[in-house]
Image 1 (cartoon, rainbow, N blue to C red):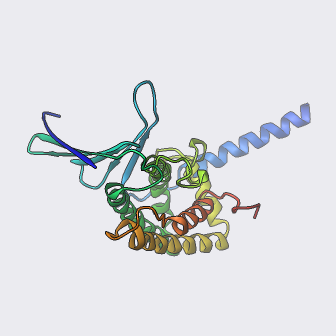
Image 2: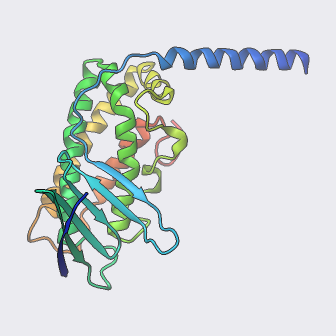
Image 3: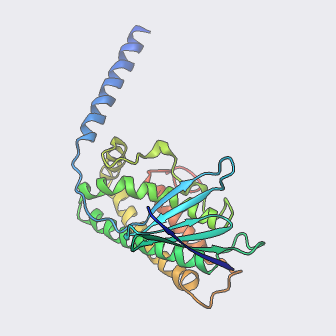
Length: 258
């Protein structure tokens, strides 16, 4: 693995009538949902941003943690660690050797491990909020968590240079969420949860299972210095992750309808 380091200075009538009534009702429902209160809180989740390939630029994923002065850029060929301190920007570039597609190198594993730690912490908060009916916090979290899911899918597929690193359904389309914490899509989604105590219970169980599988993946692969890089240990995590996301977005279970 090649490592480069640099320092930069600086910074019909009836039919129509019925249809119109439906539209009006739907519009009123959206307005009602939109005024549901949100309760802001500190979210320990890493921030992920995906940039697709265009022109001469390769696709990449940028990662930020709670420290605003630290970020990572991940592509299929390299990882770039950027740290701003003392009015300087320090960069370390880790080049991936050729022929290592579908595998995580040590830098990939360390970074994804850190990201997974923030996801586990956030899921723990989320499950507790479901348990205590803290819907205002769930509403506030929704846009951040939904954006994370999309970014995490791309982080894994870029790091492994494989579109099959995670099930495609774990990359939620824009139609399912907005990046605004005030989005009515959040209200509609969470209102569906609240209409079914059984669904909320399943979602809580799925969150706990996903936390468990994150820790197992960390222990076996991501945080294991003696891991076999040719042995992918993410299968159980991926299954738990897909199951959770299907419940979260009120999607049918794998293999059929509810």
